Image (cartoon, rainbow, N blue to C red):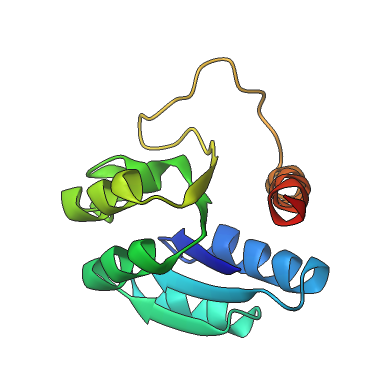
Length: 136
């Protein structure tokens, strides 16, 4: 199972995801792609097997992933304060991977009808969903 985690900014969500996924599923391979080096480095420190940075890394990672995990903004061009390029968003959207998108409701991208949860609650929800995906 190849899991791709994509994050931006400081990679806080990606770091929490990488640590929780490795703890729950030690045998999965995690590739962390940050839109910047800080995000990538933080996810690598948290337990990702591989890390890369930038647009091309997102594009290549999306082709190889079984599951893509990240904030919902990774599928919206110019989101996350402009760190998600149109090519990155297209790569996520076009990927055949299962996508677990986390509603962060930031940068004027508001997902209506979704309860506001803490980051730790959202990470727990991702782990629960991954359990269903990995068992299948």
